Image (tube, rainbow, N blue to C red; front, side, top):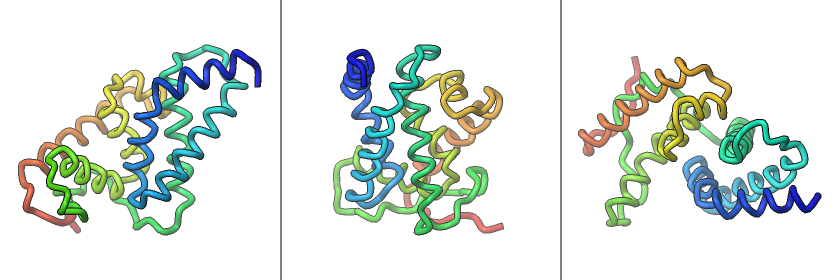
Length: 175
């Protein structure tokens, strides 16, 4: 690894480590598996800077690598239940860890539970939107076109809003 690649990795690590941790914990419920996913993301990010030519922003590069590794990780895992499209989910399930008490942790637990039920690409769009990425940035990171990102983001916003309006309702629509 060249000094420039090392510098880019250190910069990316300093700037995006919290976002990578949030992604890993959103995709994996078990802490040890989330830690494995974080390690895989950091390793692939470190390796990827040998290919980085600066044709996109550092942010786009990091999110693209992180989300591709996460998608591969989730896709390879046979332990996850079958996913369903966003528009078929009526409400979020109650969190498994009801002891948390802290409202922010409770809300994030509910969002993470939702993310584990939707297709990996839908989860990526939701996570990137929650990280504050624009529609254009999400499209560039995921490879979707901007219209598809807009539709998925709109569905995600509606789903999350509905879920938090009806906190006691549990379950998924089965049509």
